[in-house]
Length: 135
Image (cartoon, rainbow, N blue to C red):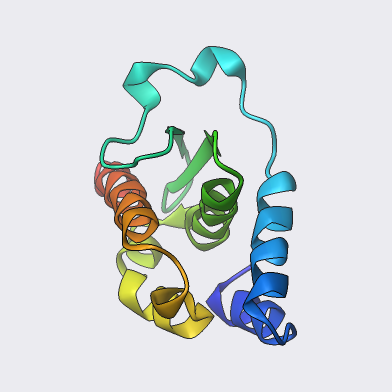
C-alpha cells in the first residue's frame, strides 16, 4: 500500500468518525509483534503512548528496511500501520522521499490528529529514516 492507496481509502469515508474507525481497523490488521521485542531498546522516544519498532535489514540490491511495530493505543497503532504501509520493505531512497507533512495533509490528519500523536508519528518516522540511512 502506498500514500495514493491510503488517500483513496480514507476518501471513501464521509466523516472523521468513520475515518478514525478505519484507522483503528488498520491498526488491528498489523502483524503481531512479539512481546519479547517490546523492550525499552525498541521503544520510540517522543511518543506519549508506548510505541515499539524493531527494524531489520533485508539483503538485496538495494537492501530494504522491514520492521515490526506496535503501540498500546488503538489510534497510534493505526498510525503505526500507516507508517508500515509507507516504509516497510522500502529502500533507503524510497524512505527518503516520504514527506511526513504531505502524508498528514493528503490523509487529512493535519486537522484531525492531535499534535502529540503527530509528534509521535514524526519520531517514529525519524527512527525509521535513521535505520534506512544505515542500510
